[in-house]
Image (cartoon, rainbow, N blue to C red; front, top):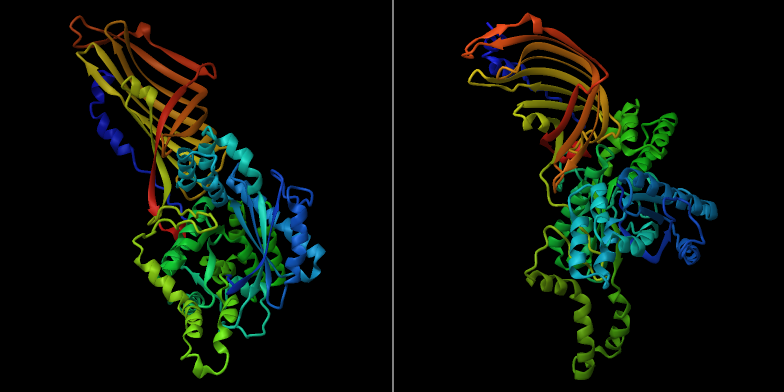
Length: 639
């Protein structure tokens, strides 16, 4: 009885041995009720540099403007520094670069103005996509079709690095780079004067410390639970803070002309996902505010802080539970030049992390008014109303000219907010996914609303080279940590035709891989780039081609595999993998001769033999289609 007839149940055996391999990977602030000074300074940085130079671009005049900004410092006021890099290069590198730029500004300010020490807040916004979008939208030199193509990339849900690649593929990229990118490497320095008259938690004359600002005590900031992007009034004092927001925005004498809404996530999980999460939280607050105050729709700018490392730093410094040595250790991790993922790992490895997780991280999952500028109708009100106050008042009601000149002013002043509210409420436009550009031209972009994010737990693959010769095969690969994976493969073509032709092969193997480019521990962008690793495999075969080729045997092999995997398709959801294996392979084969009627095989011992391959020929070659297996996960797991 030949090997061919002994294995008729090969499919049931293969299915039994193809057990599913599942690895569960779980990863699981401050705001001021402020009136912003007119003093706003922007400084620029050279390419790939955190060095603040007075001679670069318009920095010389900006340095002079800083003097007037510092002159406006009052008790309780703070300086806010928001830094960015241009959207080129790796997003994690750019986040560190923008953070270092903010640190350069702080060092300069504290060295020149010692009175500012401890009164500077920093936010690192990584790549300035919103500013690029605004510049593209305003550029009259670009055609409408070019603008649409560029904006579609900027507004897409791809990660920043993929957006950059898509921009570089456009014929307009060279013009974009030369026209805009220099002005996208900047830091904004703003004086924020605290208005604590309405705060219930803090005393009217109290100082705004870095810690209290980070915790948002008594300030109009909306906090979000770990697993949600929905506003809960009962959560962490949100109801009181929302009441303060309502009172601020409904004051008819102080109507906002520009409002910056910031959204943030705690530094846990992938930066790219946290960027979207911060923007989503900001959008939730925007939708809430515009539903009650429709006139704000055209006046809102959105900023995603992504991971608020500055807020975490401030909260740690102000924490009363942590000791000095513990704070020093944690601040050292935050201020290091490590990647966000590495910082997160170091924080979690610290013995102080449970305190940070409980007492700090909840305060940096928020949406807030980060900046607000007001119209100034009150400036004209005294001039318009002084004629009305002339004595005697009784004659005012009888003198028609005096009454008509003062009445319009009174109506415009007292009914300013209701008039805007009524006017906008009639408008049929409803912006639920985006906020329209305000008059300054900045167009904030939001990601599409998502119920959850996806996380790859494994990938199913098929070798297209085997498939081309009807060699059915399947491989399952599971990512581990952020740069390792294990794979199991099964090759099982099993067919014969008329006793003349046979292609039967059952091969099983396992492989461990090291990937040179690490991936985020949560997300779908895994198993990409260059890899190398050991493998082992064994199998049985039965090959027959009429009477010229008739061999059966067993084989086993051990060696190393190297290869490269890259995303393909418009949405880049699947990968194409190329790999080549070299090593030691040994097979013992037996030769058979079919009878004239092909109904039997006769063993021919003279044709038996063995074959050894010791790093002389490739033992495996693959061009594999890789389909990820992922599942939805709530946003909280990615904060």
